[in-house]
Image (cartoon, rainbow over all chains, first blue to last red):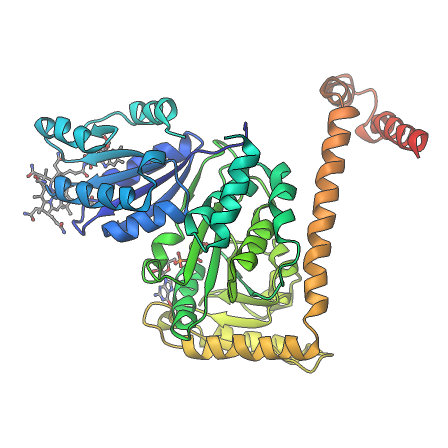
Length: 132
Length: 324
Ligand code: B12
Ligand SMILES: Nc1nc2c(ncn2[C@@H]2O[C@H](COP(=O)(O)OP(=O)(O)OP(=O)(O)O)[C@@H](O)[C@H]2O)c(=O)[nH]1
Ligand SMILES: [Mg+2]
């Protein structure tokens, strides 16, 4: 399946105005030869519906509001309910304190990227950790 | 599960109206076109009943926002709607930034809509190779309406014309003057002309289009209407929708069969061309030979490219004659 393209959905749960990080990472993903679907501001239902219809391999959540546990839980619960959680790699980025990483991972997030993360690392992680 | 089992199981879920299965089948036809025959053998007796509409125009004219707005109205009317939006693939990285869905957040949770973003993946003409196959899947899924949004096009990318029954060409204020309207290509293919962003002006463009249409002879008696819209406030959307239904009525009166045949012919020819190109490139065209021709022409100044290319042409012709 050489022509298979990696598809990534980038979403910003909630409506805080910090869209910059999500855009920077999206561009890096585009430049790495993947197809990036920019979801923009979406609620959990919209995110999961988009992930399903776009049949993405990766779901990225960009969160700077401090509400990362609440949003991530809503999204993951819905993905599980729809039966697609096991197919999609979930990444969370934005302003996330390091002490919250373990709990997010326990919830099912594959990796977390706070301020200052290198986009190369993100791209590399995606390429080596796809679930399907 | 073997590959075959995967497809079989997806098909049976698809037939139960499972959107996840539809999404997966789209991925397969997009990535592995050689599997299309395995998929479509299950849909041989489907009726090709969806009404297919194309929205095209330059980058940023508001195609996606308009798609969201008209799809909303169609859903309100109780119709099921399948959307395909194409954005360009980078010729450098092969990646793409697909930014059409973000303009349609208003409709994405409606149970009767399905929306898929596609990258053009090197296909020319403003669409992607998979568009036809996805319209077939949407038809099999029972969509009443299919909307195809092209990439932001220039003057000469109008393949969508071959795949749809109604073409909406979208322009914006500042498009140009009377000379622009005389050029061949995109400006010729509209069944409806929509001047979007009317909040920024556009009356003059509408007049220019009307003047262009004044100078055109319409054998079928149908003259494309010109509408002004503001996709954000929703002004003019009802009128645009009415124009779409009017054109649909006209097409159906005239016989939609011709348009359906045209769609299939376009795809069949494309499949043949793709196959032939692949066969010839793989079997007869040697990269070294091409490099040699370049070297002869450019560095040695011995032969021009036209005198050397014959060797390759002759080889291909000979081989084809031998086998026929
Ligand atoms: C610029 C900025 C703004 C700009 C945003 C501009 C824009 N369009 O994005 C403006 C001025 C609008 C703004 C406003 C506010 N801000 Co502000 N802002 C910042 C600041 C200084 C930098 C953010 C930034 O753009 N960084 C550059 C980008 C590239 O980095 P990044 O977003 O972190 O992204 C990187 C990683 O996080 C990761 N990443 C991000 N998303 C994703 C997604 C995925 C999938 C992956 C894999 C990785 C990933 O990769 C990126 C590359 O390394 C931060 C402080 C900081 N140092 O982070 C505060 C900060 C985020 N803001 C903060 C606050 C509180 C606010 C306001 C509420 C302030 C106020 N009281 O008015 C308002 C909110 C406004 C609103 N409507 O919601 C707080 C958030 C606190 C928290 N969550 O606990 C911060 C942390 C400042 C602070 N120390 O208090 N802000
Ligand atoms: N002022 C104004 N802005 C509009 C209108 N319609 C769309 N826009 C804005 O124009 C920008 C582009 O809109 P899109 O719908 O993404 O345009 P598009 O033609 O799909 O763009 P591409 O797919 O990139 O070619 C967005 O910022 C929209 O909000 C309108 O009627 N008036
Ligand atoms: Mg668009």
